[in-house]
Image (cartoon, rainbow, N blue to C red; front, side, top):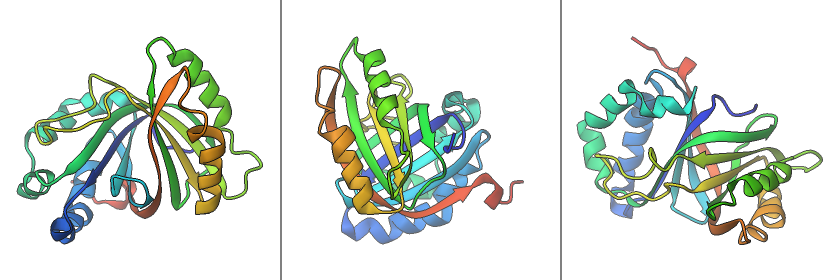
Length: 223
């Protein structure tokens, strides 16, 4: 499985242009390391949108989805740093999905990420999962190296005390890792966005993101 761990926290947000410098400084110098240091977190990746939105996206990989309901993680949510309190209050169009990685095919991760947000229709989850699993095979597709399906847990996703307004609970996300934006865009259109609005799911949104940087547990000094 090319993704580390079996759980994932997906967060995505906009911030006003006047706040972006502080927001990015906080994310890069404090927040990513703080989260990755939590027991059970494996790594995190930050992205910025080429197309679609919200503008900023972060993927946190965890050993299991239960890590995102653990005492260590809950304690961090309940005790935000001053920088977290200040910057999270500025989030707009927030998406927060605590998800299980239910399918991951291919090898490795790319600097370009396609993302498709789907809302399954009640009773169609098994059929949708089977259809998507077939479509996630990257074999023979130049510029695409791996593809994944993550399914959010409605009870764990959405708002937190730090972020009282957040969407994403119950949604599924297709992630397409690639080396070429045109290739990612083409396969996203051919396999997912053109057929997603079906009897099985509603297409909510899609976008293409560039990797800003990533941080693994092994990169930080733990005390």
